[in-house]
Image (cartoon, rainbow, N blue to C red; front, side, top):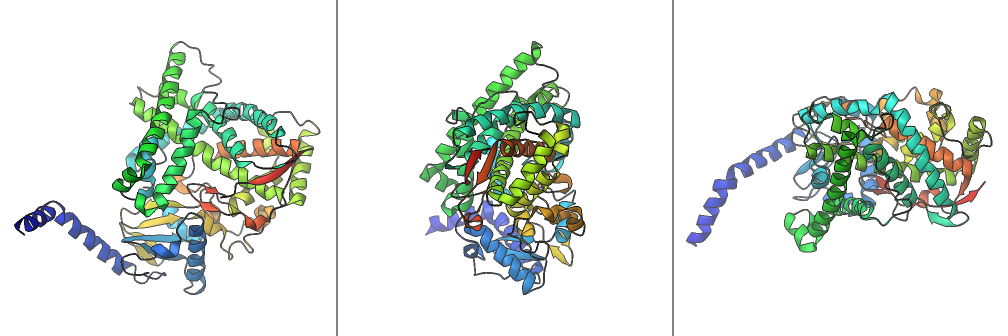
Length: 495
């Protein structure tokens, strides 16, 4: 018995203060959130079991809670308790403006820590002063003149994609993996100056490692037995994760070393510099370590292909189910390119794709590429009439806002004309945020839109898309990006 009390004393000696502080924080959050729409759930677990057990049921459950808060409580924000954590979610752009435009509450939630072993604290995961410094450093990478150089690379890899897709003509197939490998090739070439050629080599170790890291990250966030370090080790998750991180880092380190050598020997075309070249040139002036360079390159590899490939897949799904809209987009492209199906897209061509632009935007509305983004509140935050307590999580939820019937009537209907000026001018600027907004908006959104228009327009010039499946039948998995459990199954035929 004396040993038990001795252990109890040691526990409180080391953890007692921390436990008391956390309990006080929890009670304070409970008091402050009492009047905010949303129920408390069940003791200890809160609303955990109502949110669903996987990434498919979760978005449906959250959407239902948002509707209930809007219709029954006439609110624009709802709270949820997940164990001892309080999570807030707004479903109008006007309410979200408070967090989107904040220059202080810019830190991501703890869920993103799962990706830190791979991505480090690069631009995506960094917060505070480090994020501000990196954002300032990296912004010139997406200057107009740099984007023009990237267009040539996008065209080159799109042509490879079209040739590969020819082999799938006339049969139903999942087009998403092809979109993913194409965007991976583009970002690898623009970010690192490396021709990965994953469209022809889908089984190379780096491609498989990235795919595995994405899967493992979502498994760890959705499965309670993987929330502890012990659970990760016992299930073999940690071993598989560490091996994949090593493969990804070894590849990036090798490319960085090769690129530094080429730059030192003056063998890099000044007009074809990659994102990595800019980081290397800033190494001394901005006091960047090799790890700093690698984490930014890895971040751009991740963020630069996954969201774009998701959008491409969903755009293919939308167009294949709406032949009259697809035909209208094709006719616009005929006016721009004539009968030349092989000519590269130029900056001027892209600027003339007005209807295609609306089609892509509507695809990103229904199938938000990044459905949820979590911020951790370091201080109390006033959101309209409500004061949200520090220590809580606040979710920026494009998926929920984009499906708000009061903003978008019949939100499951695909209608590109929602983005005509006369139909969108009355909406709040933050009622449509596929790339987020404010200080932490997507730094590469213009890069992404160029790539999306080049790839989609090139596919439509070469192929006609169709599908016999129900448009609304596809499952939506709210992972890091929005995916389909069944894949994006379409039929393409040469025009």
